[in-house]
Length: 149
Image 1 (cartoon, rainbow, N blue to C red):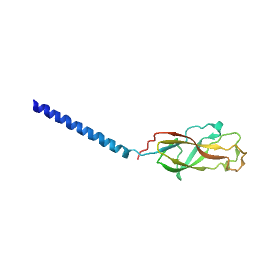
Image 2: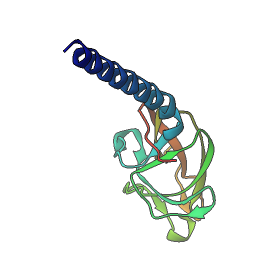
Image 3: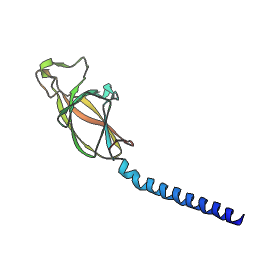
Image 4: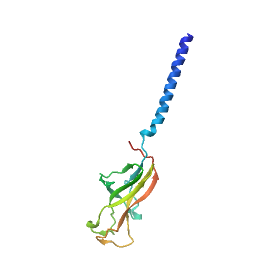
């Protein structure tokens, strides 16, 4: 009977060591399975009373994209080509002047950047003047980013 108890003890010990090693291996491999990233978002409706309006992303780093609410990206500089969605009644610029603009975002890990169009109301813009707006980051927040490798 002592032999069986000892054998059972050895099995339990081996199992415990195996599980400990498996857990350590899982911890060691976790960073390789995850990729650090930040997020650029265009889904929040900014405060129109602050002359901020939504944008539509047309290109990311020069590549055409279908606009979506969030863009998880590797840290570093990324270029967003955006079109403004300004619906202010005082905007009197022709449709031909409503061109896309590029916004460069220096993405940091675990940060979210909300982008928008800032309507410049300091002058009256008429005709084909394209200076009536610029793309901006209007809000930044800590955000745990998840990106598959």
